[in-house]
Image (cartoon, rainbow, N blue to C red; front, top):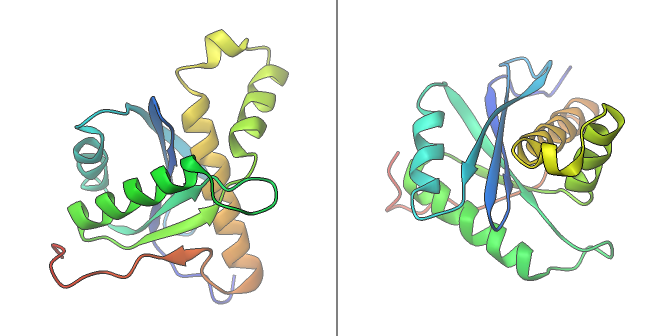
Length: 158
């Protein structure tokens, strides 16, 4: 575990209708689901409230690039959401490639016997767990923090 930065992280899977939130323990042993937040004008505030419950190292926000690694409309949306979250909380945000995390989450739920309709309320949390666990595993295996950061501006609250 050399090079792993100890601390709680919140994984965020940004969708157009819902935002999945997951967290990990300070040692990065396990990512677990926290909540599905409705995507509306108060979504950032709700995630900021959740973050207050933890001594947070950073947010890990999924960046939904296409299979070729290029940006899409969803990528632009996730970047904007991440920037707003960082501005609101003053906590560092890492943007990590989350290709296929939602597809993987749907597959995992189907294999556990849940229908897509019955999984709608938790699939975003599971996608957040998957992207957060991948980020943790990447940092542990490489010793480098995953993804890219959004520079903290001087006007952000600290």
